Length: 162
Image 1: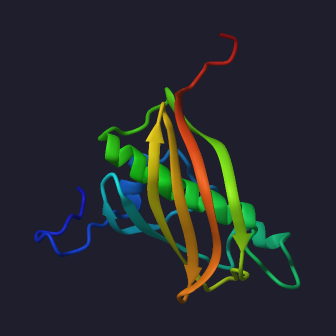
Image 2: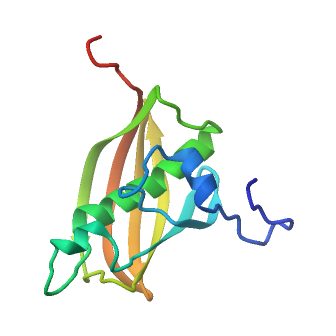
């Protein structure tokens, strides 16, 4: 059951079980914990609670745990995928997969550490011929951690051997 606001001025949210309906990712690669607001066809805001229990902190880095930049970009891409699927009014199945087409102007501004809450804001810039382009920013306590323009496409999953 989607937890949507009853009045138009309130935020629209998705919990983890609803997020899993829009993303095929599962632990340890599901990187969106909650959607706190969205406007179909336009924007989405989601969060990732970063905990010391994340597997990647065992090796990145044991003396100074820092969330890898590629995982911050992945979290933004997952947030973008949720918005795209909701905008198209479809849920992915085993026959669909989302691919990166490009990552432009990626800038990493601050480290993300255990205990941080990564707030991800994604805006659809345009869609053309099956390519979605987004402006994506992730921040911690109002300070930008990473920003980038992402391009993705949704394609049919090709079975091995076909």
